[in-house]
Length: 191
Length: 281
Image (cartoon, rainbow over all chains, first blue to last red; front, side):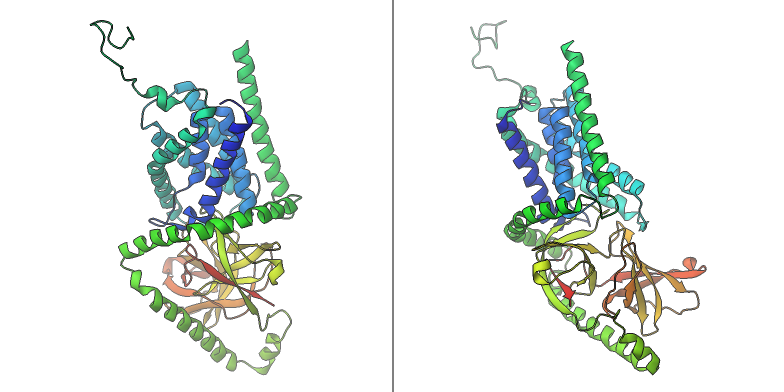
């Protein structure tokens, strides 16, 4: 990702929108007792299109915003989302997935990582109440919902961030159409 | 060489962000850290945005939830539920009064103590933000200190107790719900009066645990659970006596040890609240 003021602005607006939409809308729209979570999707999306450093920075910013907005212990979500953003970005840099369904895999993995790590960090900070096994159902439903949401969310993020990207994994993965057929052996070349 | 620098820079950024997060955690842990004013300021800036988003998204949420309700064949129950909520509240009040009437005069003096909030003034508030994970059960509401809301005041929803105010700014407040991992409410079962501490089960907002009940208390399923007038948690405060919370859903024989523990289903749907009331005054 090219670190221009425009790129910072776009990522900032994306993260703010993700946090506001999540806490004011999606958190109250429940399916099977759980809801989709846009925040890990947005962070994974920025990491997918921008790489590990923008991913980690986005995770930190989104987590801080979430903790401040809801009065949670500041740093909890930042820590987890920084790791999610960095991990997603590193995976993209190392493996460079270009498959059309790669966003779905990123969405699933990022959400599962976020929810499990958040649970772990919360436990380390001390949970005085007993924990129901239904918390696992919440994790599974949220991960599956996010897997479904990942494709449209990543598509939107890709369009929004296109001007600021060094390379778009999805665009690179698509087959280029030949403009016209040339002589045999030169098909696809502009001759 | 350039690659090495790139790798070093990438790792340095990651390490700095992780350290910053851990630093924030350390500073914020314990609820009275130096970050509270920053959090209050941030909430003051974000609350108009959240409020606008909540209003703008309400039709979408309503449509989504309506589809869910219809799918569950529950769409027609709203009016009846409201009526049942009212009746439960009346029943809880009546049963608490009935029990109080049988008490000795000495107990009446206890009820007059300053610790028991009397004549609370409800302030109606709209929920503008809700925590997205099971680990934190908090909501943001659109009333604050300007409306007379203060920290530790109880918050009730349609069916009964919802939680208490844990942070209050000018125009917004944070409410920690009774399903939050940190919550513990002193409660009693009416009309028998068996008392214990009500704690949540993380991840299951429809099942609270009433713990530390005397082993000899006879508990019936379906009995009403109300607040008994005090809380025992890290942040001590007082709930008014007799606010309905839920009903006993299960008495598990296996859990009869030194104390017995029963499961309580809260009357309020704590994950789908649009409007709540803060009991001020």
